Each structure stands twice: as C-alpha cells, then as structure tokens.
Image 1: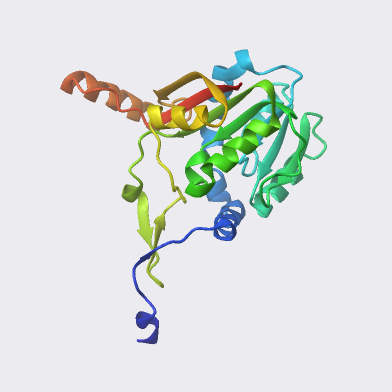
Image 2: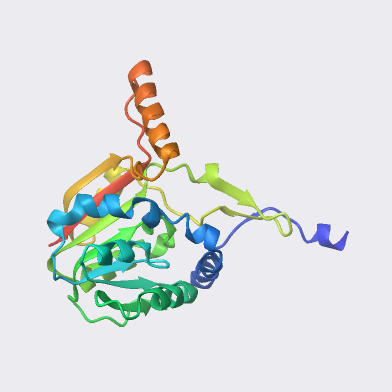
Length: 250
C-alpha cells in the first residue's frame, strides 16, 4: 500500500543530469545501442552528403552516442571526432576507435561552451539529436555548433518529421513519471527547422522530408512502399517520417 501511495502521474522534468543518466543506460544496453538511427541510416546519409564533405577535412558528430556514424565515415576514409553528454557513450566510443588513424578524438560535453576551439571543423553532423535538446537550450546548442564550424562550414541535421510527441509517451509503473520513450522533447517541420537554423547563423542549402533507412532490412522497405501506395490511392500528400536539413555557416 505504501508503494501505491507513492504513485502519481506526472510529466518528467528533464534536466542535463537526467538526460545523461538516460543515455548512460542506453550505452550499457547493447540491444538498444544496435537500434541507433546512425547505425540504420548512416551510410545512406553519407552517400547524400559526400559532395559536401572534404576528404581530408575535420568532421564532428555532435551527439555521437557510441559512434556508429563515425565508423561509417572511417570506413570511407573520412576523419571524424565525437561529442556527447553521456560519459558511458564516450567511453564505449573511445574503446572502439582509439588507434584508428581517422579518429580525431572524443569530447564529453558537460556544458556550453565545450572545450573545443573556435572554427575547428569543416562539417558537423547533428543526427537525431535536436529533438532531445532541452527546449530552452536549442538556440544555445546551435550557436555552439556555429562557433565550432569554420566560415562556410556545413551543418547537417536529421530529426523525425512532424512527430506527435504524445503518441510515444509511456508511464513509469512505480512512480507515475510520464516521458517520451526515447526522450524526445521537440518536434519540427520544414518551416520551423529552417527558421531556427536561420536565426542561428546558417544559410539553408536544403530542408526536406524524406524516408531514410530503406536499405536496412525488409521492414523499412515495406513501410516505404505502403506509404507510397497509400498516398497514390487516397491522393494524400506524402507523409514522410524523416526531416533533413543542410545548412552553411554564414
């Protein structure tokens, strides 16, 4: 009965410590690590962006997790560094890539500004991370990325397209805490994403709705085909699950 008395439904109040704790757990659970978006769509994204990535340039994965994207970059001969707020993720990434000649280091982000000098990178990847940022720190993080990029450097962002956040919320059966099951706090469409980038010093190269990850298994391919059939049959506008943005530092 005492345990039941401690249960009351309430929305999670995220802060930096709780976000780091959440992703430290993910880094310890290999089954969840294997579901990382960068693992699923990383090669496809690099295919899209190769015209903009310098062969001997400096590339940063901002919100790198355990480093799936970096692995794909290294396999193609590109350099890369990682930054993340999860100490466990950084530890796993360093264990994986220390000794790799393309690995340019890992940074544990404990606050902004990060301990990286200005204009240090040619390209920054921001994959499936912007939706996890505390809403009152969105501009702060984008200004930080702008600081880290060289003039004319590129920022690539991917995020769910027009996500209905409440659709993916769950509740803790012990305490009643309600939270998005993978800690999303922000939702974007083409207009809102383009606008936030513009006000933080980026010139849009493209911003569009897409379907990523179709090369990773039959289920994603089936989903894409079903989406196309539905749009054709019912004459509905495309309802694509992913949003991608490429911007250039002004």
